Image 1 (spheres, rainbow, N blue to C red):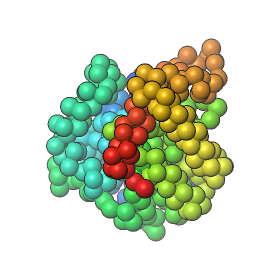
Image 2: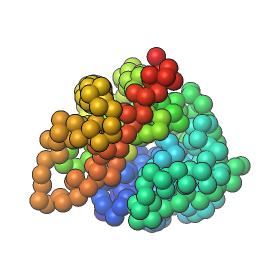
Image 3: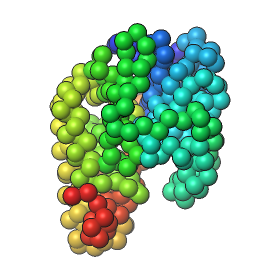
Length: 313
């Protein structure tokens, strides 16, 4: 199965085929008496995930947990479909985002405003999940996967206030969603993901510090795969976030218009993708998940909120 990659420590990566492209968003299945899937991708491509799980021999009663790093639709949009296909699975998400999976109307409406036409071609609406099947977790809670394996769940805001990471202390694997950034095929460095509405620069740096203190053996990005060696990758992510923020802030001080900040970021970081005629989707992947404009929007909103004293200090 080309969409499935066997990784160490009983972990399997599943390519969600988001937007019809390879290596955009990964789901990670942890083998255990009570298996857990970390991330599922958007609703419009979740069939690839379900097919992969069935292809690995999983039936409707086998999946115990679906863990979502946050409720953005490229990570959680297909959660209702996974819940329907695996009726005994518990959907695990931050307590700050759980209600939006039970009643996703507001999530879908706000996503449609952000994504526009992409909502119908890439993402699709998140379908409701019975509240009894959604577990909203706080920082430090654990999932017992059986056989001595557990996942530690960490509240890791910055990219989003409802972001969590999952740490497999048995293997040292750390699943970080978008909180470290993105590094997909063709990218020469980790790029931060700083979208509106609740990106917070201070919290993002604190989350990276927390990850480094864990000393994980491997860091798995949702977009896409392992970054190695982990401490070097986390240091790089911190440095790149700082560089992007400094560039955005300088541009914002000149002219606070979004277009100016976007153009400045695009000019400063134009060389982060290596041209590859064999991979025409390299630029499209990045534009979809961490484009200059979406990152600029997050910075502009953050700077405005910071001026009002409404951000972390």
